Length: 263
Image (cartoon, rainbow, N blue to C red; front, side, top):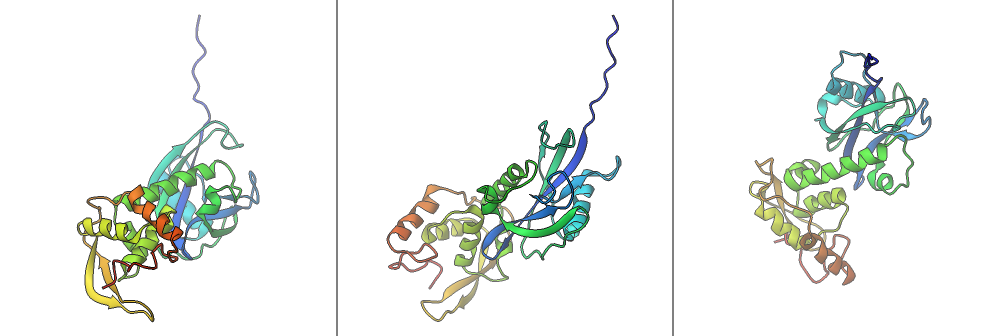
């Protein structure tokens, strides 16, 4: 008996892009409004199929970023996030998608093109909560991308890129709170930052405000990797809840305590 010859299944290869930035004090993800079926009119990640069999996958990701959102791919560091290939994830057939992640500050407004009717920055909390309806399995991909970004803040000096050339500990804490989606206790955060060698360096200057004591200014240090890392934990967040319950201000500070980055 001769077995039927094996034939490879028809599988399409695509790329999807999770691009995150801080905008208007919230973590935002780049989404497009699809101009074609499937999911015409729905929000989705920018992305698409390979242009041809010889196209490099990373090159396809950069091309799609330019074509669908008008963003300069050369200015972004794209890293592979994961591979998504469950049967039924795309009504056009068996589609395997290689997802890429970019986390960058001060990104411009996107410009829609090709298969996109519109492109805009959307708050990630609305995506993760289900408040915004997305096509395909893109909510899952964004969830994975946000978690990767949160881990990057634990182990790298990425947060300083979202601050200005000089910043206060409070400015840095605001970045962590926005990306992690949690309130942090100022004193515990200050202690963690100071223990991480080479993370930030004092400038010797202060920022003065109309009220309160001046805050010390820092700049990004020489270390790209945090040692020890600043890990999300109960000791970072728990006291902030206590301050809030006891009448703390909008930064999680108790009204009876001075912020530790103030002299």
